[in-house]
Length: 295
Image (cartoon, rainbow, N blue to C red; front, side):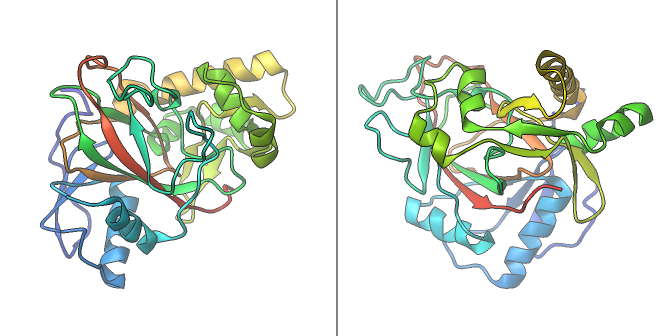
């Protein structure tokens, strides 16, 4: 059985809610909580502890308005804006929609306005201070497929040889919105967007408060600092390919009403095109919380 399928392993802490591990890689399901209700500081801290243990948390059967999702998100910190633009030129709203629906016709399409979410990435790594966590609330889902895949970068780092770990120590990569648009084949970044989100550099190996280390990779990277451009990109592609191999991946199969949040510090993720994109809407509402500078 593949590691990303259901595996009922032990939960390591006692939580004030019912929680079930979904796989050995990442993922847990919390039940019996209505996120429309205000949560206490103790509940917030327990959710964050669960996020540290499981990296992906799914609350099933949630019926949230955008305002209610925004209110829930604010429990965890400052909500980030997005440099992306709608076809109209307007900035994305704070709670914005991730979808395969065409902006003009409202119909499902294989070529949505932006498709960067189908590439492995960690949210907002092109910021000086990237995202801590992201939330998606499933409004419409295909009858099958349309999953989101999460790759555990802690496990991927631990699988490297000692020589590879030593070689990567201190290496930094340059992330930018411009690189994202080039790497994904999306509409090129405008001059305004380049000014708004200039290139930033982050460590390729990220060290967390608990002392653990993880790879910090994804489609927002343009090149490796101080390394030949092509050689650096080849190295990054090889690392990402190995880090997103099946043993390190949890596949989340969406259900309408899911509110799923994940830890951007230790995961990369991408949407899967494993459904009939021209036949079935996939609509999710997204918020993201500001994190800390990677070290």
